[in-house]
Figure (cartoon, rainbow, N blue to C red):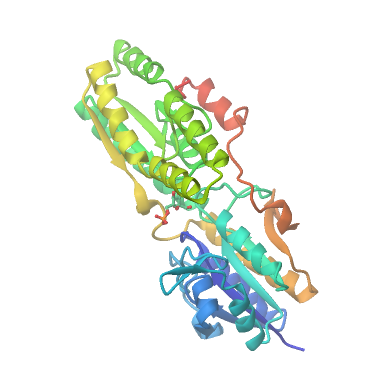
Length: 373
Ligand code: F6P
């Protein structure tokens, strides 16, 4: 008997999502006798039952297109803004699931989506997730969908910044996304040959960075590229962050909790100002002109790389195969050359950061890149 399957894409978009939707949908149709319905704009579409039948014509011609044909949002099912009030809307989403007689719901997303999907699993839904984020920070998978494309874009940006930094004898700081994980900055920094790479996992001392730049100058290289992960911090800021986190944890009263939460939120929202400040200070310490490029959303836009198209097709197809077998409560993770279902419990509330003894860290050090420590 034909099974009914729902799918949504949630969190920040990534290149390769459409390839995953196509991989899931075409496998569902041609191989596994599943009927697929897509919900628009993440969990909000599931709440409001805004859906579309994903058939051969809807899934045609989308393999190479960036973004997601379904749209996305950062809504959380257990904390939805409904009429200006935060409410737990999971029961209403369960109703949509039942109205469509779904046998499973596939949620494609990053760390937040894995947690939100788990919340729906606790309400009794059959959930399968796919790991998707340019940050590459989802636990229990070797890699996430979208990372390869973003890595290519950031690397190309560093390549392009090289020639202008060289011509003007400047320091150029390039701020790279990645949330609180340094995979994107480290990977593109190594691939693009950045002279300094700053990642959240390694707190930096500005004097070490200035020394590295001055050493280059003394050897006749009067320019430097500094790849700064958006979550990178100086040792002083790391201490400040620790204090803010501790006071948030210690806050007992509701009012205090709100105040400390806001203080931490404010601290994180000023990262680009920290990059600009770092640039000004490096200018003073080295006597070299310094400029900043914030790559921003360009890293998430446009055509997916061949690897992400392949990965999307693979994990989408694997999700269809799992649903046909009746498996649920798992994320389709990538292990080496293959995919493997892993229990959602092993993924939620965890972030995969760059281990400081990772080969990428060692590789950067071996080629003389300054990591700021
Ligand atoms: O998680 C992907 C990501 O692009 C992060 O690298 C970045 O910190 C964040 O999303 C930006 O979020 P938003 O799209 O909500 O501005």
